Amino acid sequence: MELQFKSWAESAPRLVTVAAGREAADLVVRGCKLVNVQSREILNWQVAVADGRFAYVGPDAAHCIGPQTRVIEADGRYLIPGLCDGHMHIESGMLTPAEFAAAVIPHGTTTMFTDPHEIANVMGLKGVRMMHDEALMQPINIYTQMPSCAPSAPGLETTGFEISAEDVAEAMAWPGIIGLGEMMNFPGVINGDPQMLAEMAATMNAGKTVGGHYASPDKGIAFSAYVAGGAADDHEGTAEADAIARVRNGMRSMMRLGSAWYDVESQITAVTEKGLDPRNFILCTDDCHSGTLVNDGHMNRVVRHAIDCGCDPLIALQMATINTATHFGLERELGSIAPGRRADMILTSDLTTLPIEEVIARGQTVARDGKITVDCPHYDWPVAARQTVHMKPLTATNFEVAAPDGANKVKAKVIGVVENQAPTKALTAELPVVDGLVEGEGDTYQIALVERHRATGQVTNGFVSGFGYQGRMAMASTVAHDSHHMIVVGTDREMMAKAANRLGEVGGGVAVWKDGAELALVELPIAGLMSDSPAAEVAAKADRMVAAMAECGCTLNNAYMQHSLLALVVIPSLRISDLGLVDVDKFEITELFEENA
Image (cartoon, rainbow, N blue to C red; front, top):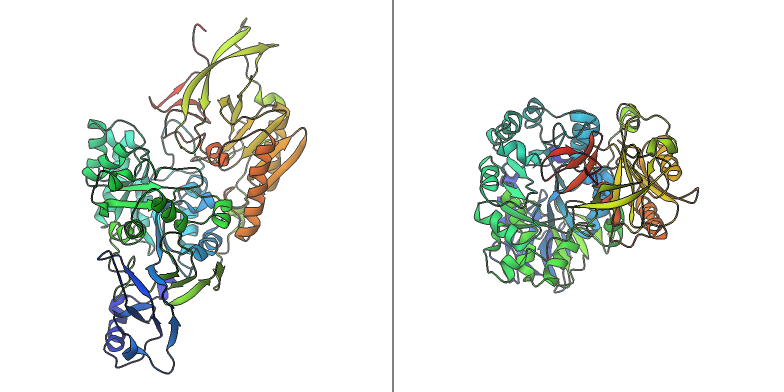
C-alpha cells in the first residue's frame, strides 16, 4: 500500500549504500538508452533500484549488482519515466480506481492526479473518501484532488450532496490528497464568492495545488480575476491563444486528449510553432471511457498524438512526466529517472510509436507486453454506494413537452452537440405542434433530465441536435456530469421511458433502446457511475453501447461523452439541469421557447 511505501528520507541510508556499491541493489536495468527528462537528452546509462527508488543512475551500475539482484537487459531499448496523467476523472472510465489502474498500467501510466467530483455529487465527502482509500491501495501512484464544486454552479442544479469549505479543509489532511479539484465555478471566483475563495484558501494554506477550470472564451479582466484567485492550471483550452494566455499568466496549460476531447493539436502549436517554453505545458486525458482505455490506450495515446502533431518526442515525454510532477510539487518524488525518485519506468523500443513493452512501478514489474502482472486490490464498497438511483417509474407522458396555448408551431432553444469538444452550441429550431405537444423534427429530438437522487419525480424536458439519431430510439445514462441525475435523449417518448426505467432497475448505467427492444446496457452499480467488474468486460459492454448508438443513426466520434456532458452547466453554451434549461453564457435559467415565435 502507498502508506507503507518508504519515503526518500527513510530509504536514503540504503540508497546511499547501494549507490556507493557497499550493498547490492534489488534491481538493475542495463543496456538501455535512458531518456533524461531533467536535461532533455538520451544517455547510454544504467539504473540501480533499492526500496522501490532509484539509487544509482549513471554510466555503469555493475558495482550495484549482487547475487540476489534482478537484472533486466534492455537490449538497446529506451528507458523512459512512467507516464503521469495531470488531470482526470476515474469515474469517466466507468471503473473503480482498482479496475482503472488495472486497465492503464499496461499502457505505461504509473501516476494519476484524479478529481472524483463525480462521486462527490452523488455521495458527498464519504464517496470521495472511498475513492481516495481505494486509490491508496494500488501498486501505482494515484493522488486525489478534493472536489471543489458540488454543485458545480449553485442555483443552476441540485446535487445529491454538496461540498462545503469545511469538507475541503478536512480533506486536506488526508494522506492521499494532493490539492483541490478543478474550480469550475469560475463566475463564483471572479465575483468573490466566499465559499469558493475559502476552499482555495484552505488548499493554499495546506501548501497544495488548486486545480483550474476556466471555460469562458473571455481572456480579459474576468480571466485575470480568476487567475488571481489561485487556480494553478487549466485544461479547458481549445485553441492556441488559450494555451498562450494560461502560461503567460503563470498557469500550466493542460492539453487534453480524452475519448472525445481533442484539444492537443489546436494548442500544441504554441510550443511547436510559436516556440514557447514547454515546461509549463502538461498532457492529460480528463475523461476516457473504458473502451478507449482497453482498445486505444491512456497517456501513451496522448504522448503519441502530441508527437504526431509535430512535438519533439522528448518534449512530449516531459509534458507527461517531469512537467506534471513539478506542477504538483512532486519533482523530487516522481516524474524522472533520477536518484531518490520512485522507480517508475517503461522500456520501449521506439520513442515515436511508443510501444509499452515493460512497465516498472516502485521497482516492481507491473506489466509486460500489454499484460498486467500484479494485483490491484479492491475496496469493499458498501451497500449504500450500490443503491444510489432513486426514481419513480416513468411513462411516455413524463416526456411530453406542452406547447403554448393555441400554438401550431414553436421556436425552441436547442442544445447543439459539437463533435470532439465539450462546449455546445445554443441553437434554435422551428418545431411542429401535434395535439398540443411539441414534437422533434429532423435532427432535433428530445432530451430530458430525470432527477434520481431523491425520487422527486421531476423531469425537465428540452431539445437537442447533432447526434444524427433516426427511428424510434432512446439513450439514457446516470452518468450526467456533474450533478449525475439521469440524461435521456430520444426520438420516441415510449423508448425514453423504457430506457430510463431500465436504469432504475439495475442501479444505474447506460441503456440504449430501439423499436421497443434493448440494444445495449452497461451496468454501473457503484454510485450509478462505476463498475467493479474487470475493465475488459466493461469495455465490451461499452463497445456494444457505441455500436448501438451507431445503429440508431449516430455518426459522431465517442458521442457517449457528449451525451454525458449535456447537463454540465459550467461549460457553454446551452445545457439542461433539474431546474430547467441553462444558458451557460449568462449563467442563468432560460425559457425553452423563444418569445414572439
